[in-house]
Length: 229
Image (tube, rainbow, N blue to C red):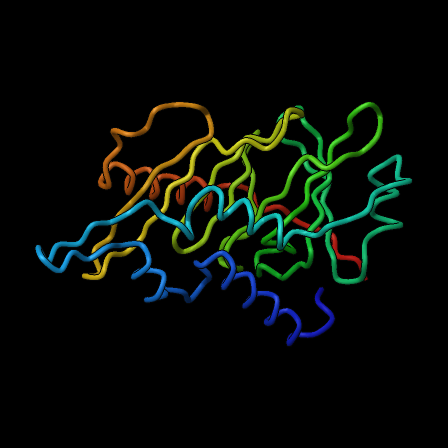
């Protein structure tokens, strides 16, 4: 666990601020930044999301999941035994046939029998040695990292992501998000890194996809981490 309740709250607050969609967030400033109001026509033009974009979420994961120097480590066990500090967590997880080590910056009791996490650096064996596969994060403790088969889910109040984890990397297959215009109107977006063309997906369809992804995430298996004492 975290060294203190104060430390946990500080870390959770920082993450919620960075990702822009923590448990209690509905930030008026970010809403205003995602639209352009034309005074002449008094109409609202909604632009592509920023704080919910793939690039922003990827950067947030890189900044919040732990950075570990694994030099000299030949096994996952050596990473856990030699490199992890008190309060950090680890889990050995199979995504179908792909076995990985997930290391989080801290764990929390999810009150369902799991010690959950909202960020992770993910390691895999390549050439018989561990190496970093990638990083992921959620936007708050209401959205613990979860898995189903080859899929890994992360989320927040304003976005949800579905990744495929394989020896080739962590690929974002589906991401849906919502932004708000100056009138409080909801505008939904859908993105993917599978090279498909989703330009014809409108807000209503993206909203349906987002709800379906949330349903998948909450039905998935919460990843249970062991905590370094």
